[in-house]
Image (cartoon, rainbow, N blue to C red; front, side, top):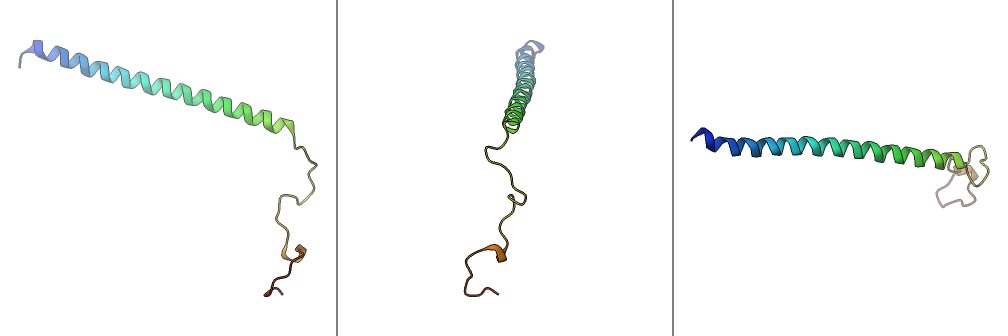
Length: 75
């Protein structure tokens, strides 16, 4: 193979490598922008507050003793 034939191949490989690096940089920047947008939306949502008042214990499921229905095998 002549040296003249290797130049176009080297240029193609170089172009592919440069394109891959550029793609990874652009992808990383887009991910950061998306993450920043998502965090800002989450902060805005959290700052609005809840539409209903929070009562202590509202986050838990009712205990078995609190339920009105007593099944066949309940104690």
